[in-house]
Every structure is written in structure tokens, then in C-alpha cells.
Length: 223
Picture 1 (spheres, one colour):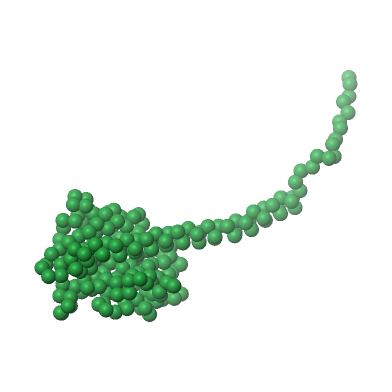
Picture 2: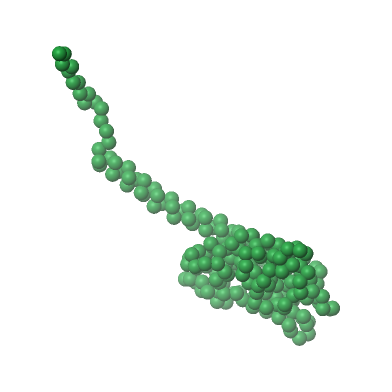
């Protein structure tokens, strides 16, 4: 019988426990930095979509005003463009998923409604929101004199359901975008969540007005 000599190569080495612990620690540090940054970037992107809806709403209001000489409002229930209006109340167009698409003559969806400046003429314009988006557009109410049918001014409120910031526009200072934030809004469910503001003719409706935010409660103008 031949005995083979066992040769041990001492140059072959593995990872030590200390080296493995160092690698795990480095990965943990990188994850602790990267994950919050990714979450913040994702929230900013979601919030940006709400800004876009506010801009779209301004365009829809311009379409209504060119037809009626008045501004309009969103309604809480999906409807076709042929349906009648219910008046410039406090309507949240994110109340049902059907409002994520624009209304047509045959399809229920999101729209803005208005009433004519002279003759009582109802008119509707399609207004698409997109998934997980809320828009609450309010026209000024019925007043005496210059605005007999209401709708001389409007306020727009928009928010993404997974965002932490709501955005707003006041027709009387149309070039200014307002916002209010609360970090808890990202996980507290759907809906506008921020405090909507009633439209008042010839007034700054949002400056120093409560918006329900945390830690800053008021709507503030974005520079």
C-alpha cells in the first residue's frame, strides 16, 4: 500500500469573521443613506404630479371662462358632459376612481362645470386627473351685482394620495402657487387632507390661511 503525502497550502485563505462584519457594516451604512434619499426623491416626484394637475386645472378654467365668462368647479360624483351642474359648492373630485379619467358625452369621469354670465347656461369641460390624484376646485358663490351666477373667481387644490404636499392656486393671483405639507399625509390614506379654501372675489384667499399642515399649518406661497 502506498501512502500519499497530504500537502497543505498555507497560502489559501478565506474571509475572517472581522472582515465579514466590516463588509456587512459598510452595506448597512450605504443602505441607511440611500433608502431615505430614494424615498425623498420618490415623494418629490409624486408631489410634482400634483403640481401638474394644478396647471391643467388652470387651463380647464380658461376654457370654461372663454365659453361662459365665468369659472367652474369640480363635482363629487362622476358625470358625463351632458349632465346638469349642481352649483359652485365644496366638491372633491377625488371621491371616486372614475374621476381619474376625463368625462365624455357617454363616459362618466372628471369634469368642471360652470354657469353662464348672462343667460343661465350650463357648460362642462373634461378634466383628467390621473390615478391616485385629487383635485378640489371651487368657484366663488352667488353674489349680488357683478357676479350674479357666481364663478367670478376660483380656488384650485390638488394632491397626490401618496404625496405629503398639497398645492393651490387662487385666480385673483393666478401666477402664484401655494403649498402646505404634512409628512403623515403619505400614509394617512386618500383625499385632499389639506384644508380647502373657499373662493372669494378680488381677495388673496391663501396667504396666512390655515391649510392643516404640520409643522407649519398655513398655506404658503412657493418662491
